[in-house]
Image 1 (tube, rainbow, N blue to C red):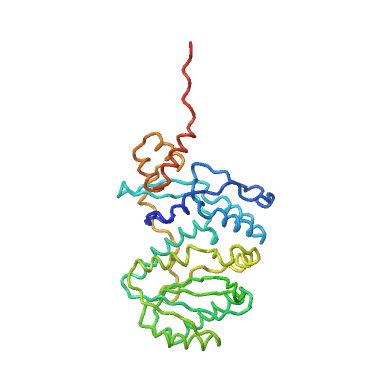
Image 2 (cartoon, helix red, strand yellow):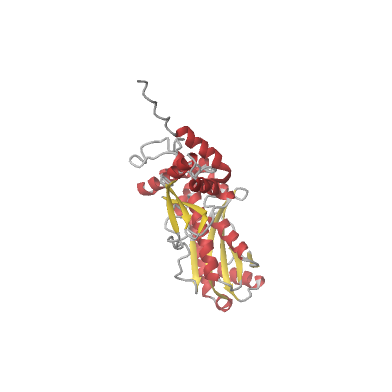
Amino acid sequence: MCAGIDTSPDSLFLQLERPETNQHNDIYGSPGGLSEDDELASTFRHDGWKRNRKLVYQSLRRTLQSKSRVANFNECGATAYVYRAVDDPAKFRLGGSSCRDRFCVPCSIDRSRCLATNVLKTLGKRPARFVTLTLRQTDAHLRDILDRLYDSFRKLRARSFWKHRVKGGCAFIEIKYNAANDAWNVHLHAIVHGRFIPKRDLSAEWYKITGDSFIVDVRAIENEEKIARYVVKYCSKPCNNTFLNRKDFLDTVVIVMVGRRLCLTFGDWRGISLTESPNETDWISLGSFHTVVTKAAQGDRECLAAVHAICRDKAAELLAAAQNARPPPEEKPTN
């Protein structure tokens, strides 16, 4: 996980539970996929998206993604450790193994938080704007639509209209499926800094480039909180519900997104790694998640504080499970 980003209650359920089984040696051999076996050390990391996670796992297998990718996705969160901030004894976070797959929701949340932190750091106090670019819906293949969107955005950045107004920024891709029109709906969302961008003029430039698309949006960013929410919104949901429940559509997205960058940087942001985790040296390890929860159940104050800080309303359930999992005390000899 990204250091410096506090664990928020609304995303806890997506951060704590590990996969339900380990199938590294026979990742394609078992048609059953993920099992329902939970362990204390990884409880709740994938709670909240178990069903959808299984759909993604099955898609990775169907589309013959590499065994290492499928195994890593399957074993995401197999080890979890609790860390305490050196300069703040009341601040805790979870860390450990993660698959970092673009279709893993907990990993996407971790990545989006790092992105939000780095975007705010790179932007500083400079005024910024949200820009959305949309292609007209057609019956084209998703691969062709994405290629066209990337190419059209590249052409836009090369125009004097854009260069005169935009100094730099970053962009994210959003993919949806419109069942009513039976077509893919793809957007490019960007955070840019520079001069004022007239929406009408941007629409005209976009139409000149695409030949059929003119829908754009430009909004001024009022505060840092909106920037963080914007980044998290478009980076933490890799599997949109509009195509997740259709095997053929999900498989298409999995295949088409192989090798494509999720975050684009341009202008004076080019070369900046927005996904790089901040410095980890300000944290010290308290031990594995299992060890910390077990110690907390036994009354260790620091571990108890860590469990409550990280797990919040799930803390009582974890502590009860830890107490039940502890071996009974040794019986005293009768003679």
